[in-house]
Length: 205
Image 1 (cartoon, one colour):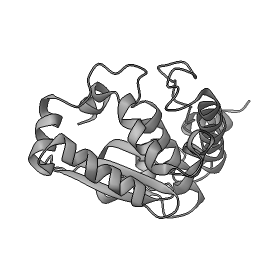
Image 2: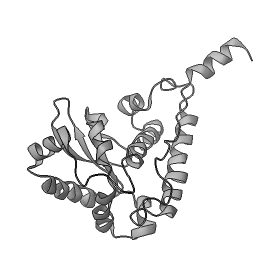
Image 3: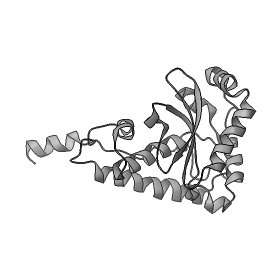
């Protein structure tokens, strides 16, 4: 193998699947093993594979996932990078038996400051997730001043595109819940709150 080819291989970043911190059946009955097997094992794996096949030879081949999401124009590279980032944040924010039912510390204070109460935040966030038309995501994010925002992102977009830091995301693409809840998106959203690992979300803030 010649030196130029070795250099090209070293320059190209390979994006990988996030490692789940729980077993595939650990989130049942909120998210079934069948859904994890398809959503994580097939859908996310496809996004990762697509991204790794698209970036060689482009300006994005040596950039981090976050850099691609922020800077890539709309199109295949952005769509797949956005979904890899979104799903990584999504799957790593859950726990089978969370240690707390709501966030504490600075995040808990910020939620009460910006939404009045944790219950009011849950109400507003759930309404955003349930009311998003079509496929996409609902996100809780923080701006550079620490103020919290709830946004709706279509398809595979991410709040980082608007200069926000994503903290908590609910996936409302049908493949994330249809095997377990069919068309009952609202019931799925309601149940997701019981498996949020708030310690993970607090660290992101």
